[in-house]
Structure formats: C-alpha cells, structure tokens
Length: 476
Image 1 (cartoon, rainbow, N blue to C red):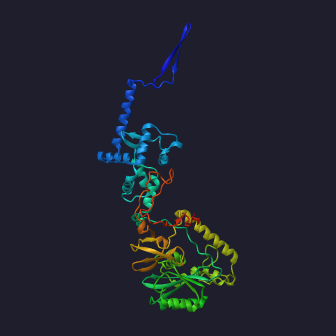
Image 2 (cartoon, rainbow, N blue to C red):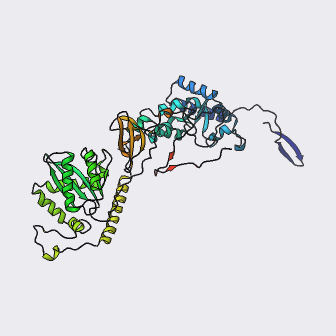
Image 3 (cartoon, rainbow, N blue to C red):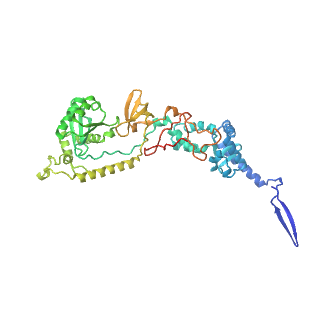
C-alpha cells in the first residue's frame, strides 16, 4: 500500500496529511532488522522440520498427500492468505477453526505447532503405527501428541484400542461391585455346601447362611451317593432347607443330586464354574474349619468351640440356630444354658448394616465399576480356555452367561469373559470424506465399520451397565 501526502500551507507552518485511500504499490526495502528476523524464523522452521522423526522421502510423501487432500489443501491456502470470518468458512474446515492460530507452514509442509497434520488418506496407517506394541489409550495418545495431529485424533485412538482384539484378549478386567447375599428370614433357610481336603482325607461341609453354623462329615468315597448320604444325615438333624448353594463339582452336577433335590423339595443353585466367590459363604466356612484344625487337636472339640463362640453380632452360631447356648469344657452357670432366642429383628438389622458396610469398603478399596453387559450373539474371548466363543444368553445366576464354543456350550462368569468385536466389524477405518464435507462438521468423529452394508449398530452400554436404547422414530 502506498501512502500519499497532501501538503497544506498555513502561515508560518506546514501541515502534512496522509491519503489512506491510495492503493498504488510501493517497492519496500527490508531493513537489516527485518532481514534478521526473517532469517531467525527460517532457522526455527528448519529446526522444527529436522526434529520430526521422519525421513526426507516420508516428509515429501506427507507433503504431497497434504496438497492432494481437498481439505488440507484449503487449510494450507488459509494459512497462506489468512483465515476468513467463521461464518464465511467452508463447512469442511470448521473442525480446523479452533486450531487456526496453531496451524502453520514449514515451507510447504502443514504443521500444528510442531506436529504433522495427517491427511485423510494416511490416518488409518498412522493409527496402526500409533498402536504398535498394543499400548493403552493413555500411552497411545501421549505418543501421538508428540508428532501427529488431525481433528478427532483422540477419539480415533480410543476407538482403535477399545476395538483391538489382541488388547481385549490380554487386558485385565477390573473388579465389579460386591454382591452381598440377603439375610435369610430364619435359620436353616439357605445353606451352602462344599467339599475340601485335609490331610489326604475328603470332607463335606454344610453351613447355614443365617447363623453360620457349620456341619462337617468325612467321606470315604468322593461320589455323588456318599455326598447325598452325608447331606441327608445333616438334614435329619436340622431339617430340609429351601435353598442349597454349591459349586459345579461332578457330585453336585450329577443326575443323582438333581433327583435328590427333587425328592427333598429344595432349590439347588450352582455358582459359575471356576468362580468360587459366588459360593463365598461355603468357601469362608472351609477356611474357618481349616483354621480350627491347623493346631492338630481334636477336630470335634474344635468345631464345638466354634459353634459356642459368639460372632461379631454378639451371638454364637448355636444360639442363632437353636436358641440356646452349648455346654462346652469351660465352666458355665446352668442359667446360661437355658433356651433363649436372640432379638431377631435387631439381629437382622445389624446384619444388613454389616453387609452394607462390608460392600462399601470392598467397592472403595478395589475401585470397582460394573463391566459392560454382553449381548446375545456377541463374540467373546475366554482367557482360561484360550478360545473364542459366542454369547447364547444370560444364565440364571448373576453376571453369568452361556457361551457357545467349538466344544459345546459352557457357563462362565462375566469376569472370565473378554468381549471382542464381531468378525464383520473387526476392521477399523477413520471416517472418510467422500464429498469433501464432513457430515458432522465441528464434532468429534468416530471410526465406523469398513463394511458399508452393516447398518445394525450394537447397543450402547453405559459405564453402569445399563443398555441405552434410542427411541423409535417415524420413517417419513
């Protein structure tokens, strides 16, 4: 721009005014200071390009694809000539508007700060390179933050890691919230049973969920018939419970035990295979018995001491089960042996508070959160079996699923199942710009399936495990 001046003569003075409307070009001569600044900028740009861990052919390839990409070409043009007002910005450039102050050119190479701007055609390849080594989302984002950038990169990285089958097979699942067993309404209503070994002998244990009263019997033969006989003897002393909880041992999973449950009229519940926590009451009782017997004394006397010792609630298992205290080798007044039922209402209230506090402490200590709910037909990985399977349906037990494998159907707890992507959606691509215009410009883009004919999307499951189902809309 050339500025012209009009000289106005005033008596005794000379007034000079600039003509700002002049557009005549002027030959500008750079001062030494300006030349020095330009040289410093060039040195900085060269140092930035040299610091990028890429070879010269690789940088030339990226530069060529940037100029051939319709969106990157427009961004380069804006960096050269200046960005227009936002309302005049082409729709496909709206995702770049917030970064316009950080976008710059190093020669003909488009950068965001010191990071290479990757065009659409190279993003899938770059994502695979970022995920080399199958690191997690945080590590992959940190690695990408050093060298490359494009709109929605962070979302794309999370999608790649979350949908990587290799990562899904080997990642460690976090713990789920503790499921506490409701306090039974009366003694011997719900019992747990398990088998354990002690000094090369096999024993069967039955424990009451209400009173924690433990019965133990030695088995000469570990067969379904001997297990049933021992449980019948226990039931003859205390009555038949409504519910019996056990693991999936062959003795409990046999047809004989099923017929026994039908004959005696109780409900038999089995925990998920290889998940002993589901039968936690019996597992804890086994640990208690082994702790009583580790001293090497008389086994029956040790059990008698346990049954007569008050629990944390203030009552002994014998008092909670039979309403009376047991006579032991300790000297006792006869009055203490008189039958007297505890305050059941107060006891149940304390037990519920105790379980709630136990659950809260467990959840806080392990930082639990629910695992995603698996859907019918979803492909999963079974780490212990080292094979894939397909979800058939939810099992009757909590957090368990029936999985179809090449060797038949099995039941597994959610902790032992890793969800995988279905085969037709296993290949990931970055959302393409077929027409040069983003469908959702200015928003974080996702990574849809490469299969354009797959229009059925899997249901979205929230972090709490709830399945989010969109409302049905009219097709107009």
